[in-house]
Image (cartoon, rainbow, N blue to C red; front, side, top):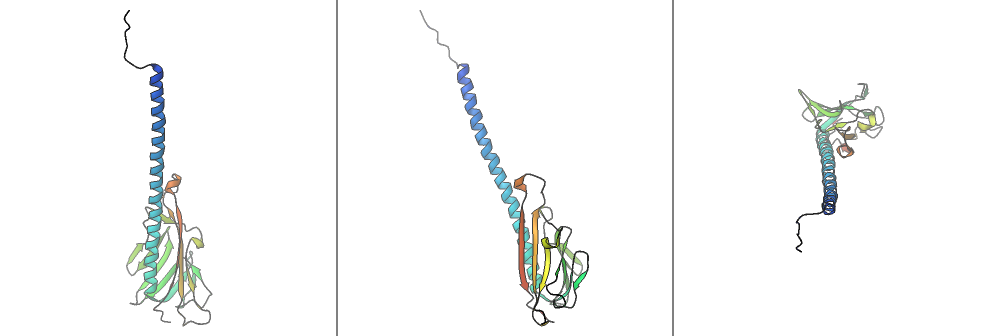
Length: 194
């Protein structure tokens, strides 16, 4: 009697191979998704850091090249200090500051409409890429300008402390698309002329 050998696979063998393929596919999908989420988080963090560092750099340059503080206002427009120095009220904190530049021009720095803006003469510029980041302006402590000067000495050069909190523009998405960072610096008016 002759035995016929049939070539092929049994159902058990096929199910085993299919199960192994599903497991390998699941592991690979998990790795790819995890990598993409990490990349998105890195891009979000980089956008926040780049915008914050750029804004601090521009603000610092403006402050260094200023010789007087014309006015410091809060978010409702109330003038907190308006005498060229910060001695009328100890350490006033506001959301908008007017500075006189060395060349005689006036520059206004303001926390406004979820951004930091610089306005000089006929030009107004946002210091942030508002498509990627924004400032939370819900309270004074998230974006401010603070004038620090020795109290009874209007001839001492004032320091301006600048602080703001940046968040990613896309706060409604997945956790990897969200982020927040604090930025803060203090700059002395080197060219102060009372």
